[in-house]
Length: 399
Ligand SMILES: Cc1ncc(COP(=O)(O)O)c(C=O)c1O
Image (tube, rainbow, N blue to C red; front, side):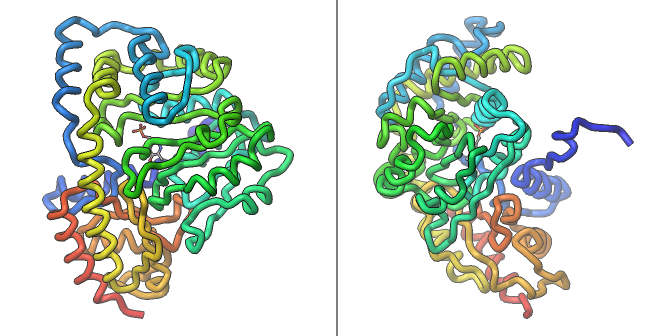
């Protein structure tokens, strides 16, 4: 038996990446699986961004850069935070990272110790609790009922706070629920948090994939929170740049400087070519962002309509953003399908992969075992094909 580090030994791999990997293995074996598991836009990265990368390569921008990213990139991020979020940050308050994941993992590791608690309203993205646990802190999962649109309210927040609470993660629009927090709820949460000594993390990676107006930002609603807050963002979803691995964090300079020291030791700068592409993405014309969001809206409408017709699926809340539907499948628990018992969302996802050749992710690791997550970051044609299969397969479910 090899003895692993205690925290790594307890670490599970990402459920979403595992579901996607299983679908890819089946595809490689010649099975026509329709993947609705990955959180990845199907669009190609816009040409102007690829051109910037080609130019960077031709100009020999192939060397180490400043660990926290080149100044032009941090200036572009600063410009974006002002333009899109109305937030003012200095260059020294910004760090560029290898994807949003690295920004979050490094900042959490920078701030927390054993004995600290970090509040995560659930259902939540699978990596939040894993990254909190890796920092040594304890994830404090706070279930938010479907009847409240899966959103945290001030009462639940107050009850979850203990003397050990050091942070809270807010993700709006949410992966996996698509919930978008309103100005009113954010105001009420901000009142509880302001001056509490609790770090407020705002994960904004889906900010531009939103269907009714825009997603309000908690630090804009309550400017005082910026002193105790960190913005997390990424170019992955907004610009269809998942493979380029560029994300960033913005917050008080001491925290950003400390996260920079960590990054200097564990990975160094984000990819130099991707940084050049990111500068173009953030500062060039932004019309493709709205175009992609428009297509996601049409898919959202299609998915809501079709999910609601599936035997045993309920979807009371229409997702207001991101590109996921998170239907409740509790009616199917206790049923059998293809000779297999359905005990939770994860077992249903497995049966659907084997019987319908459609990959979705079970809700267990999102903190909602009675649900499955369906990603609609694929063409409407593929979605219709997938729902035809799901309809036929689920009609065979027996109680
Ligand atoms: C809520 C949320 N935050 C952050 C990320 C990180 O994205 P990336 O590391 O590709 O920038 C993801 C990706 O799925 C996400 O869903």
